[in-house]
Image 1 (spheres, helix red, strand yellow):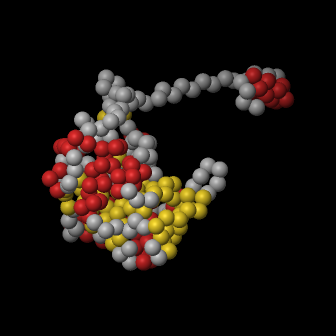
Image 2 (cartoon, one colour):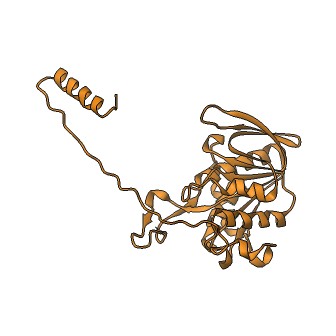
Image 3 (cartoon, one colour):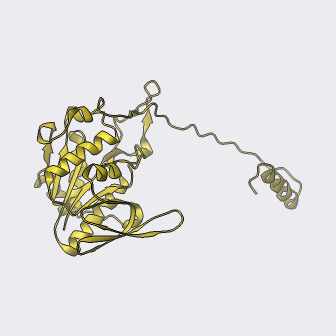
Length: 262
């Protein structure tokens, strides 16, 4: 059972700052992490490997520093790591990113399961996984909270706001993981040392892929971010005055009613 997990290194959004002049994220000095949903995707693939055997390959697109995310995934238990890095990839939107990933997966060859996180916390689009499945012309099940492999198909419990759905799909299939799928493991110290000192990361550039250069990068992206900003959060407080607790409670109830909060 061979699985591929597409991950993304993202800034820790608890510390994100916005350049007020350009409206872009200030990444300098901001710690980077594996996108949280992607960690669930990695864990999902590792559990299937432990149960049925096979391999787990992690792949990401980004600059040299994204190797840190791949090494963390290998410390968790992934067998192979691939970094897609080329100046030609810079500025790619979700469509162009999925195009590049699809070309990389075509190069990797036969795969049973493709895992992606539901969405990245720096973009929140939830588009790359489904677009990737479309480019590869394979089935997809999003918002997976339970995955069971049954011979040549998977049975997936898919989260829905009105209730869960039980879905089946033949392999190969693309699944997007949510945090309810599992609890990502913490790697052992020895695994961390091996991932950083003994395991290699493959780096693929534009020349390694069969891809139309007009469909990638900033110029090949059909969408662009118009503006990014941090919402202004304003807080107001009001002290309810009254002679007795009962009177204060009545005044509070009137105030909440006037605001249509009760």
